[in-house]
Every structure is written in C-alpha cells, then in structure tokens.
Length: 309
Image: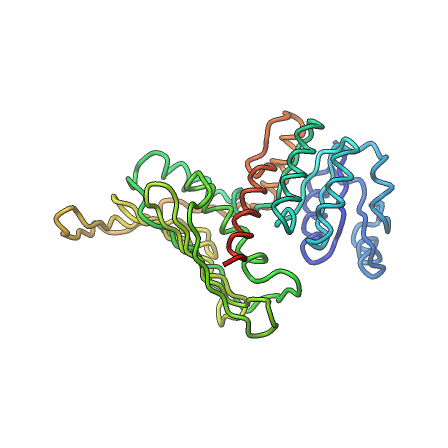
C-alpha cells in the first residue's frame, strides 16, 4: 500500500512519522523550503516534493491532507475526483456547504473520505461508548467537556474551531446525534472577532445536555470529560489516559449514595497511529470509517451554529 502526505508542518509532521512507521509512506508534498530540508534530513530515503499536484496522477492508495484549514476543500476535492481515498485533518472545511460537497463527491466516486477526529480513535473513548451503550450508567443526564491550555493561537478560526472540534466530535459520537439546541458565549481578548475563550451549552434528544469549555488562554493544561448518568458518573482524564467510574447517585427520593470510585480503563496506545491504521484498513475493506464524511459534516454544521450565536 502506498500513501502520500500533503503538508508537514506543526501537525502534518506527525502524520509523516506515523505513516512512515506503518511502512506505507511514499511521498510528502510540502511547499516550505525549510520544512522540506528538515524532512530530507530526517528521512533521507523519502521523496519530498514542493507541490501536491503531481500526486494527482500518481499510483497511490490514499493521501492525507494536513494543510491550513482554508485549503482543505480545494485539495480534497481534487484528489477525490482523481479517484484517491482521502484523509483530511480536522476541521474538514470551514463551511458545512463545502463539507457536504466533499461528502457527496466521495460518495459519487465510491471513495473513502475520513476526517481526523483523533479523539474518536482514543481507546478510552471507544471503551466509554461501549460502556454507555451497555446501559451501565443508565440514562444519560449531562456531559461536560474541558479542553483548555496556554495554546497556539489561530488567526482565522477561533478556539472552538481549533481545540473544540475533537470535543464536539466526541459528544456527537457518544450521544449518537447532533444537538437540537445550542447556546454559546465567547470572549475576544487577543484579537478582534477571534474568541480565545468559549462556553457552549448543547441540548440533545431526551433532554440530554452537554457543556463545553475551550480556551487557549488558560494557566494549565486541562483535558477532561465527565459523563453524569442515573446510575453513576464516568470521568475521562485524557492527560493520564484513565477512565474513572464513580458509583455516586441520587435516587428518586433525592437520597444520595456513594459506593466509591475506581479506575476501570487505562490505555497508553497512541491514538494517532490507531487512527491512521483505521484509514488504511478502510481503504482495504472499503468500509466507512468512524469519522467519515457525514461525521465531518455534522461537526462542521455544529461549529457553524455555535459561530452564529
């Protein structure tokens, strides 16, 4: 199997490394001279070119796109129409209209379109999904997501478009649908019209609520998911890759009980390698990935609704 990566910058270099370790990387397209020299130094046997367009006519099983978000649509469209399977980093596009167009192009050309919603491939999230679906914490009440740090500030997309994409993808995946109602509030401190700190409140079917806080202007690195159900509470500490089960409930008579807490899942597996292996498996099997084109559309549509508030 042969793949190529387009873009080897801040995140693209991680795709390059993992595809190379998986033994399928044949070429990297990178427009920046310094990055190309660095790639050639680190991977002397790897072909590195300065333009992605020659790859359209190459015999490749798939391409991975890790270029700036505003370029995702144009590049992905070209490769899908050329008959290539495509992995595109998150967010898939900057508008739901263009995301839906990519989804439709992939379908009409019978191509795999996978979006880099990395957290969906985190083993802990897969464990939590099965745990919820088994009914072990009963009816879901509300979910709380935190992703905040002193981070890399963007010039085009705000903090939720940058950091919260993963969280929104996870919330939609765990609940099983897009939110019906959304309320959001953000603050622009560093740049005009680009929010550094955003709170999002979502309501799903059956009264399930979700709350998300994203910030790239925060004193500590916090990545945590808390899921409150009628039979207990799950807490995912993403930093330490641990899932806690808190057997703490309040019954119909409003009496509380606390039967203790325990770690029920831990994993040190690298989600990026699992994600990219999933892409390769989907290329072989022709099965749809977990983060397929429709999943990408759902996330971008939700982001758009947040931005409109």
